[in-house]
Image (cartoon, rainbow, N blue to C red; front, side, top):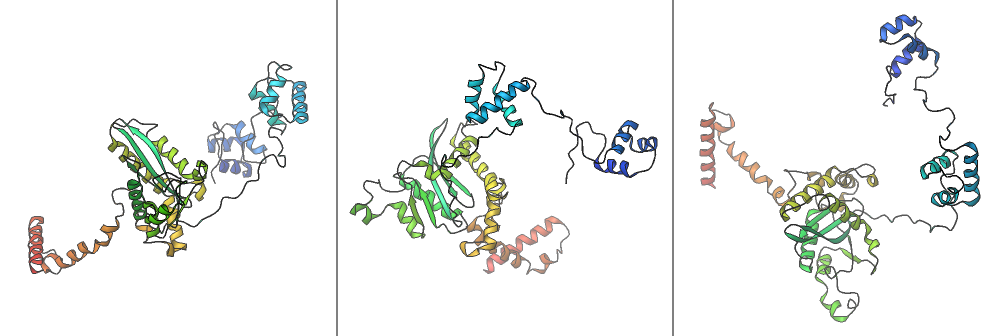
Length: 372
């Protein structure tokens, strides 16, 4: 465990322990550790090795007298008023009283927080837990010098895995394309989607129960049904129901358009991709007990592999990002190497010069291709 020492300390815990245990003279110990004899004598007298507190022995205010503090404490205990109300009421009696000095006074006497009163606040309900695969989706508007873009954002309620895309229009076609890209990008099965009541995600609430709407079914709902996904909608005029993705929208905006100026849409897309990579693969989140979203996904994979479409440990960030289609064709290059090694001249590295060896590899590739 690390040692917390004073900024001007010339000794460590080990040196202090050695001084207290040693029977050598002060002069010898001072010469051995390069200390002043008074320092050695000080630590020899003490029965502990931690730094002694340097503040006042009895905390007191440099602004308020003891009588004024007694007035403040009695007023607070009798009225149970908030900090600002106490300040406004007492400033007429104590002109030099400030908000910070009042707070420090209440803190010293242990009454800085008002007692909880039953029925004052509604009881907090625990956040319902869902298995991995519950996504919140929303749309936000961003701008660059070239014009306006719509940011489609999705975040997993459990793993906090985030996915986003930029589109020039917020219509049904782009919403469906975003959903298909999300399903392709996520390595596990999505079982539930929560969206608002926008026309991109469903019919208007007033027309949702009509025979035509139920017969034709919204295009977004059709894609959900194809992949066995339950599509839920928030209550109208209740945006806080979808608060997780609303908070993610704010995070993305604060990291991009609210902090930097983008001349082109391409610059914003590149920066957004870089931020999402850093968030999913490197950002350690308190709600995940210090894990990154990627680490949490791998942890769930070890416990519940049945929920996954493929092994998520193949996912990497950066230039070697996992590509599902390319991964399926990885055997092509492996078979090519095996075919080239069938030629003894290549397998044994018969040619010493690099140019001769490269020529032999090219000839072997031509012959292998011609035979096939």
